[in-house]
Amino acid sequence: MKIDKSFVDQILTNQRTEALTEDLINMGHHMQLNLVAEGIGCGASMQLLKVMGCDVGQGTISPDRCQQHNLLLGCKRTKATPRRKLLVNDKFQA
Image 1 (cartoon, one colour):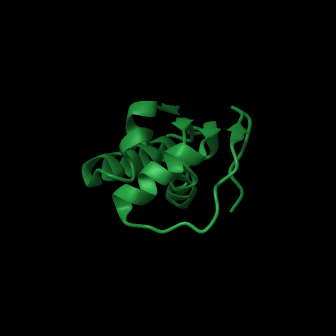
Image 2 (cartoon, helix red, strand yellow):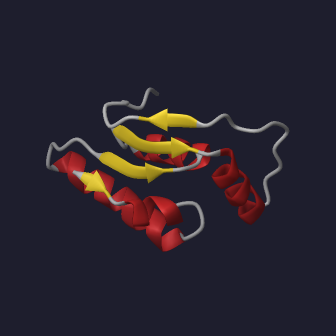
């Protein structure tokens, strides 16, 4: 089951979207489906999806995207996050 980019984009800034995404992941696992998050653009989003139990990530980790999220969330970064391509088959490791 795929989790659309529109959910992933708002997962760090919208509590309702975060809760809905977690519910979708739980429902998918209850139905014994693998979950694929589409359009991951920030390492923080990727980490949160891992914690929620998402199985696979798809997207490109962008330093610009991460910096935007960090500013919104009030986080400070000491070095840039390298651009990283996540493929459909990239399984999240715990």
